[in-house]
Image (cartoon, helix red, strand yellow):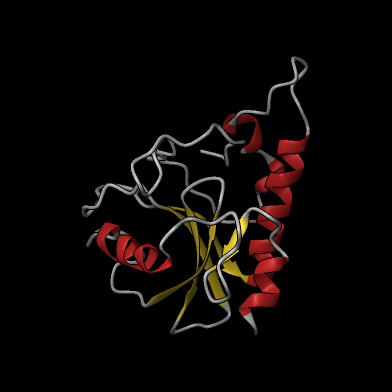
Length: 162
């Protein structure tokens, strides 16, 4: 499967690290794999798993990884950019499965975020955690999207379920 074609299926807010850098991407792509490796700790489900970062979300700190041992398996993890080994459920695993599961997860999140609460604000993570997202493996602990990889504050973007 060619990543440049599959990553495009996820939408405009993903940058394919295997292709030329997107105009709106100012992130060092080599730093993504290094930070993932740093954050995954011995108690993390993916500790010791060979993961290849193939894309990152432009609007928050999510990375899309392919599993080397099972090339048809993909995972979306949310990095904290703490530059240290994490504890507990961090980095969180937002979605995990075959490509169709990743696409279904993204489509469900996008659909839920496009529905607005009566006052015009985006739905909360609690509202997103229902049936619309039941097809993907989700985890919600430890999100820290307030700072990006450069330590600069992130602009508030629609949040993925937490």
